[in-house]
Image (cartoon, rainbow, N blue to C red; front, side, top):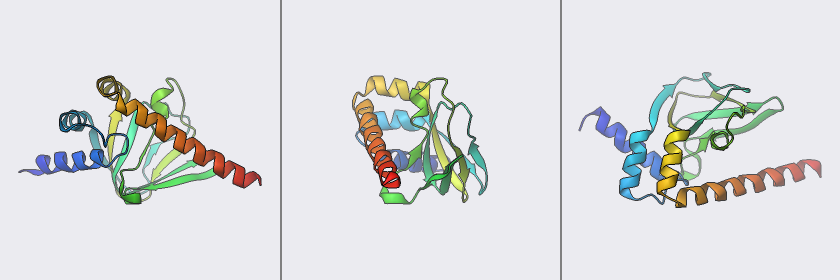
Length: 154
């Protein structure tokens, strides 16, 4: 098996470990793996800048990134976190014309898989469990945000 075969399998594992896609059938996972794009960046590379338009979901294959805003560091995301694939950009996929309110900078050499809005929407129409997982994830993140906001105010 050549490098492409190993990369394909590694990408499939990254996607399988993402909570959004963990319930996909093997065929759906293969289709998704064929739709993602892979790229590498170096430490200090800027992936997104506050004010950019974004229609892409980013999944960390390796490395670490930091999301910052005008208020400071929002969060750091590491590919090694919690044994699951970490991701960002998901909210932007559902807000056409929205500008991101954060900047993403690589903190180390990082490999990322990207999935565009069109491919994600096609996959969601074929697999109704994906939108359900996305709503669950949004709800969890909103609850965490509210908890942090409440703790800051108190």
